[in-house]
Each structure stands twice: as C-alpha cells, then as structure tokens.
Amino acid sequence: MLKPLLQYVLIGTLTFAAPSFALDKEALLDEANLLLLPRERSLPNLELIDQNGQPFDTQALRGRWHILFFGFTACPDICPTTLSDMRRLLSQLSPDVRERLQLILITADPTRDTPERLKTYLSYYRSGFMGLTGEMEQLQRLSKALGLPFVPAKQTEGDYSVAHSGNLALVAPDGTLRGHIRAPLKLEELIEALPTVVEGSR
Image (tube, rainbow, N blue to C red; front, side, top):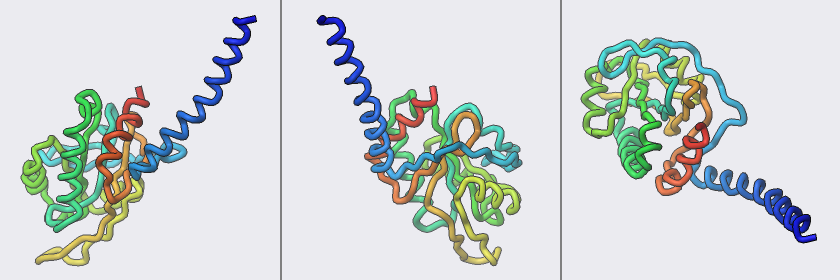
C-alpha cells in the first residue's frame, strides 16, 4: 500500500512543480525586462564590415549567443551607458556563460563611424565588444529584422545626433532572433535571468 501512495505523492509533486517552475522563470525574465519571442525569427543574409575592417556576414552570428544594439560613437548618453552597463553585467556572469555571449554595437551613423573609429571607441571599454558598420540600406534592413529602429540623420556634417532604440536584441546560436532586453537595463535582475536563457540552449 505504501508504494502506490508514494507514487501518487511523487506524481502530484511533479505535476504542480512544472507549472510553478515555468511561472518562476517567466517572472524572472519579466523582472529583468527580458522579453522572449513566442517563435524565433530568421535574419536576412547581409554583408557588413567589422571594427577591424573585415567583412562580416550575418551568418557569422551562428555558434554563440549575441546581444546586439544600434547606436553611434558620438552618442552623448544611451550608448556609453549601455556599454558601461553591459561591461559590468558580463563581468559578473560565470565564465561559462560569459564565454557564450558576444556584445555587438551596430552603428546607426555609418558616415562618421568608420571601422577605425568604432575600434577606437570600443577599446575604451576593454571588454572584447565588437562593432559593425556598412551601407545604410543593409543597416536599415538589419535594424528592421531585429526590431531595433533608428532614424537616419538627414545631415552628414557637423555636430548632429541620431535617434535610435535603447533596446538590445538577443540572437541565438542558430542565428535567429529570440528576444529583446528592453531599456532601461536592470542589471541585478539580468545577472539572474540571462544565464537561464543561455544555459537553456544546451
């Protein structure tokens, strides 16, 4: 009689534990402003240029998790804050999770942001961040695919700004868009939530 009773107890425990775990994870992600899409989205095959002046095909996003955002090196507030926050965030993740993540700044200002300028700018953060530039048409296609809008500047000379989203996109190791980290960044919560997404892809 004892064995059947134990079986019923175990089955009941597992039945209630599974939904509870799902709700806990959902709450964790929500508190971190981390929104996962109900279905992954494919990205277009585009050719850009990295901060070393080398060709970068969007197929190169395969193989590890990538966090991408649009910005520009002359940005007075959002970009420096985002890069500083992400440097702090990544430094507090476990080495295993950190190695599976790559942050990429994609310029919304290709006129000024040459590969050399991107490389110099990103070197200030000393965190192995990547930068991408390219033709405006390609950049806008990627912006639309990632759900990270920006408005191209009407001028190309002088001191001007570029309006862009403060959100970041999460691209999985299979090269598909999986979700967004919404601004403002909530670092303490992301330190807890991000590993659940990355480790869940094993």
